[in-house]
Length: 251
Image: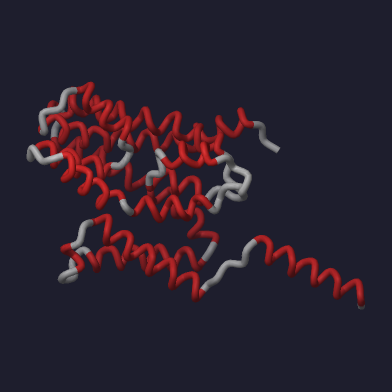
């Protein structure tokens, strides 16, 4: 069984690609922050306390438009509301004995990428693993934003765009391994890509925010997958094994 220290190091190792992706995307966020009148320190603190690209960008747009605190809170809520679903799902990965304090701290940085790392990790999730991933991912995001404020506007636009593609490559690296192992996951991934493209162009639904569209698709596709390809709980599998063993013994 791994010690807390080894789990922390494993989390840091797995979180390093996330860190590199965050540095790249943080540059783009930093450029937007600078255009909104924020300095490097403000950009650093903004990303340090708000680890969400869409929500952060929405907040920056409100700052640029001299909006109110209420408008900023509402915009950030709409852009980040999908994380409620991720948190509910991830809570099932922890042992029932995991203290509320750890759950609260981990909820601070449930991003798409870190959620992908955690949900694909076999067995129960241990807080020390998540803290290890946080230790490299959070500084990467915050420092990337700060560097973007400082030098982002100096770089050619084509280079900034190329750096942003790194995050999509990281997403692919997260979803490909489980998709290769499970055909149901592969089908869900393909359907998700097709559905995401469709709702971004269909009338009415395309007018909804990106966060709202993601929630609708997540609930619909996951519910459909759960009905068509249900997954047995570990307890059910153990009961089946015990029942089969009992039948063999009786025979």
